[in-house]
Length: 291
Image (cartoon, rainbow, N blue to C red; front, side, top):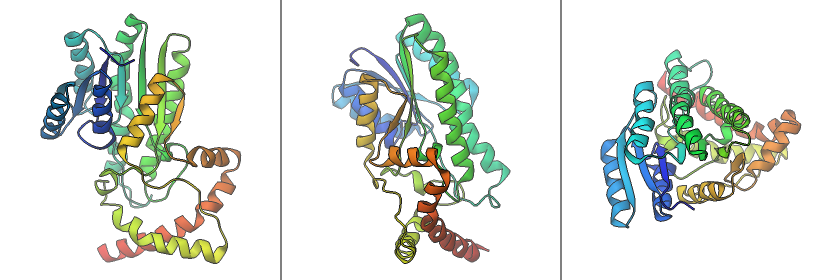
């Protein structure tokens, strides 16, 4: 189904974006690789071409409106189609609400939210001319439920989910699909490059504390699958292109936990309390050392 299709992927230099580019190209698509790290893009393009695929490098900072629009317009000018747009570029942050700076808030929304309009608006023009297309926005489980110490990211990804739902309604019965993907933990460098410092130390230190608190209180933690490779997420996104759906939950148990939170936020929070307490202990210790 992807033979001769044109797929634009933002945040393609690593992680889910790179895995998607490799998979799409193997299925016959020409992939347009967009990101800021030009060297990484060229390395990926060379790998794809060595495997017999087609890849085009387009350096781009999607937080800059002119660059994002140029990415879409130039792709159409050169290739005469825009069949798939994957808005994958994104970044998190690590800070309590009190410690979240104005700069963090602006950064989280510029990259995770504003860029959606910058790419989708021009892409829709071409997709409507073609009478077909698929827009895939990579959100997060943080776009459906809350987590502590990254409130701006949580808020931004909730906005991404809402944007996609509104987009779907505007495209109803137009043969242009829109889907939002909500991964949980993925084996990428996401947690190590969060603004405000890496989240990896907190995750590793809080793990044993969380388990102890859960056992002491007799609380069942959310039964959501742990870390999975980016390739697994890419395959599930490919499945969504073949069989379009509104939302993609890439981890076992994720959809069920979201459904619980939708029915009763309080019940979902009860399962999260050991996580909150464990991470709070580590966060306050880390910040205390920094202070």
